[in-house]
Length: 621
Image (tube, rainbow, N blue to C red):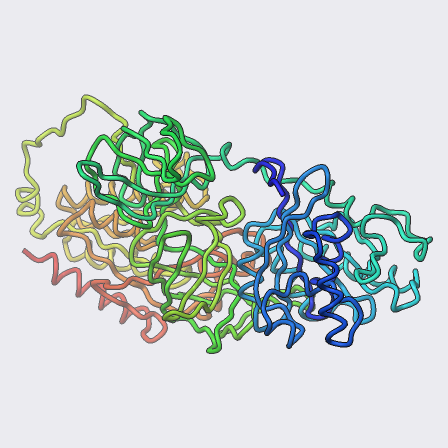
C-alpha cells in the first residue's frame, strides 16, 4: 500500500510483558483494517490447523521459524496499518527479557506507545520495565490495552482494578494515558468496533485512540543537523555524505562542523538517490555536499548552521538501561555510539538506580543486568551532543563493550554547560597594547615569580581555608599575594551571572582571565573555586601559560558532607539547591594536577605547610 507523508505518519511501538498478546493484537488489527495481503488469512488457518491450534493471529508477525517454535518474538518488526485517516506504522517490540535491546531500538523513533496488559496476569515486572522504557525514550503518549478480557468473563470490576493500577503507575513518572481500553485481541473485541460482550464500556475503540495521538512536529522545522557518514573523493569533487536528521539548508548557507568548529559554505548539493539535483536539502534526506573550502571533515562530525550549533561537552549524564552480563561499575571504559559518532567514554560515577516497583531513586555502586540507572560519563575530547528528549539522533546512545551492545539510553544535559569555545571574536578593531613595564621587571622588584595557584575540589574540601591561611603565611614572609574570592567577585565583576551551568562556566572563564592579569603583574594569586569541569580549568590554564598551578584539594564526598558548615549539602539533598556539585551535578577530578593536598589524611597545619612550601619552591627566582 502507498505510505503517507512524514507529516501524516504515526509511529506506534507496541510493548508489554511476554505472552500478554502483543503479536496477536497486531495480527488481528491488520485483519480488521484490511491491511493483510489477499490469501493471508487462509494461510494462517492452514498453519494453525497443521499445528493443532485455533487460528493464531501472531503468526502474521513471527517471520522466523524459531519464533513459531518458541512462541516468542525475538526481532523488532515494522508494519504499516491502514486506518483511513493516516498510515500508522506499528512497531512490534519484543517482550522477552533476552530481547530488550530490540525493544529499545524499536521504540527509539516512535511517536507513541501501546502498552498491552494481560487481564488475567495484570501488571508484571516486564510491563513496568517496558512502561518506564517508553518514558526513558521520550515517549509520553501511551494507550493501554487490557487484553484477554474475555478470559475473565468480561468482568468490569477486574478492568476497573487494572485501569487504576496502570494509571497510578504511569502517573508515578509523569504519563497520563490517552486511553485504557478493554480488548480481546483474539476475538477482536473493541478493536475497530465496540463489543456487545463489554456493554459496560462506552469509550473509544482501540483504533479510534490512534487518531487522537499526535505525530511529532516535522523535523524540518527544527535546527539543522547533518550527521556526516563519510567523505568521498570523485574526480575533482570532494563530497561530504550524510543524513539530514533535522532542519533544512540550501546552496550558499554557511555550515559549521562540530566538534572542531570548521566553517565552510555549501557550494553544491549532490543527490545520493539518483534524483534530479536540488539547491535545497531537508530533514530525512541523505545527501552529498560539496563545500567551497577544503576543510577537514570526518565521519561522526555534525554540520549545523553557524548560528545554532549543537552543544559540545566531554561530560554528561546518561539515563541508562543496562543490558550487559557483567555489572557496570564506576571506572568502566566503553564505546559510545550516537548516530554515526563513536567515542570512548568512562563511567565517572553511578549517581542513582531506579526501583521499578516504587519508582524511587536509590544509591548504589553497581548496575546489574536490566537495571535502570543514571550515570555520569566523560570522554577525553568534547563531543557534539544533545538532550535526549530534544534530539533523537544526537541525544540517544548505545554503549558497546567490544562488539556487544551492553546498554542504551538518553543523554541528559541538565546543568551541563556548553563547552564550545566561541569561534568568532565579537569585538572588532582592537589591538593589544604593549606595556612599558615588563613582567620580568615586576618579578625582579617583588623578588619572586608571578603565578596562579588554582585550588579546586568539592565544596567543603577546604579550598578557601587553605588559600586564606597560605596567603597570610606568604604575606608575613614578604611575598606579594592575593586571594580571589568567589563571593567577592560575584558582588562586583560577576554580579551579572547566575548559577546556571553556562553562567558558572563563564564565571570561571572570567576568574581565569583576572588571575592571569595578577600573575602578569608579578603577584602570586590564589583562587579557591570548585571549578568542576576539566574543560573550564583548562581554559584558565591556557590564560596563564607557564604560570598556572592546579592544586587538587582532595576530600571524599562523605567527608565534605560531614563537614557541611553552611548546610549546603543538606539543602541540596532536600532538593532546595539544584545542580549542586557532588550531589546533583558532576565534578571532574583533575587528571594531572601539579599538587594534591588530601585534607582527610592531614590536618590544617600540615596542609597549609605543604601548600606554602610548594608555592615557595615554584615561585622563587
